[in-house]
Length: 292
Image 1 (cartoon, one colour):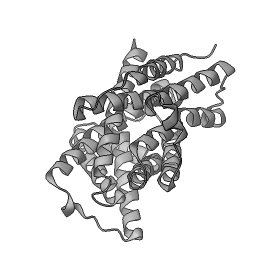
Image 2: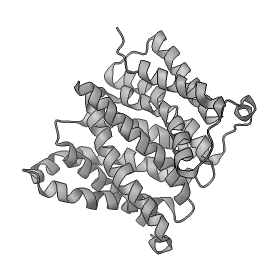
Image 3: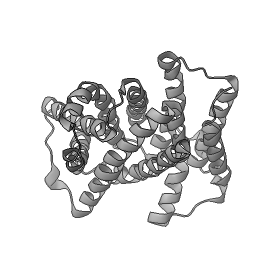
Image 4: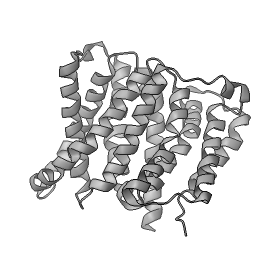
């Protein structure tokens, strides 16, 4: 029963992250990506701070978790910085396609870190999952698939996706029975330090005064839900289920983006992508099963 609840939490996190692709695309051209990432992290830290004050032995917990959080947060904030940077020169379609590689990359890295094995059956499921994801992304159009080509922004996002894989693996590898909210707080706090240091070295200005009122609503979504909320959900479920099973929910992201685009922007859903949505959902379910 507990595992079912954890899978439900991962699904909620996947929906929130899928929404963040649409929000990030809207913010990508406003101010520099490093400043945007710092702003969303600060927003998340300020929201979680009251929860830490009410916890017993929070100071000791922070001292215990902080050194490991430095490593975890590095990969986490690097993903968001590169995501914003890549969206300057590429599209949400391309980033969604590249992001679908993360479950397989995570599984491969898990072989070396956790001695996991990718069976031939599971490899076949990964191929089917990739097919289902591409079907949704390219709307079942073979011509659109053939016209797909990588640009400079895509290479940047490829590094970002690799960083997200490392973040997922680091959460499992460095977890030491920490209070989850304290671990999330330390991760986000260290993320603020990493980003602030990069801002100082790069010479970028904050430019927060350029943000319009609607932009601040998007920042609130990214900071509270897509950063604080999903940090807690992913860290909790990755410890319980493992990086491979959690990351496999990525295959649902393109389908969720399509549905959210319909609900929020009233964009029509082509009947051509229904087979891809069904295949993505089926393979995500199959990837949750343990190998015998």
